[in-house]
Image 1 (cartoon, rainbow, N blue to C red):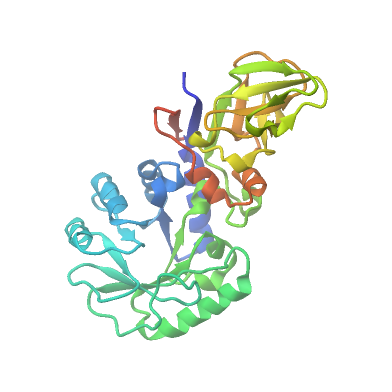
Image 2: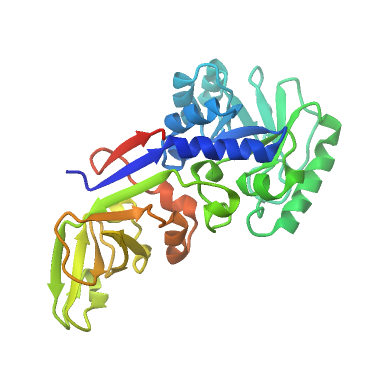
Length: 339
């Protein structure tokens, strides 16, 4: 029996893609499917969003791009991270498009010049005259989800710097900007987190018409009663103040249920229950209000419980929660539906 089960609803991905296409108006939707589609499955997600009008796939590495090229021979694939040496030759042979943030522009491969307008990471300080191999100009917004005023400043800098080259494809918006900053949309928007039904603002995805696509489930593998004064887990971080029923769920930080998610809630038998004690590599314990049967279903994400809820407890972002979920068959069963 598997420790947990992941269900990826491609129907939800499709609906999110349609929502973004509608929001973007005439700007193109470029789907960000790096990091194995934020843990959802890059190939599955890519096929769904291309069907719904996405015109390009964006990845972080040449290796990710090559995997997708094998599945989608005709798709436009943009590598957003740095590449060098043999990677450039491989990209050229596979008809991948590369991002240049420093150094010379390679020949005979389509490239996008990345201008640093305020992210302070990858990017050119100034935009030189684009060569014939340049097909796009881009920047990366640092605060579209938290500080729209600074994001607007970045957009204005980008618009001014690229105005002489408006015949090239210009793209700046991420999911947050695509949803809330119309002036950022230019010719295309690189949307990732919103495609998966995750809020770029850390709030309820439904606020922006998005639908979570990932469901994560497990079960109670043991139920036991702690007497007052007894504890559960490493370090005795939870000591029962009175006789207390607890359930042991066979999922831990090796499965992606982070150690700092102690104190979050999961859904046990249809009711929200608190995770108590220290999250270990292979197990968590939950506080119950009474004895429950072995194998009672436990929902880790789903049934109204959002990745955003766990992120707030762990003081992180929803991206990290879903990207860390372990989907290898040795730990979990993965099911894809298209409902």
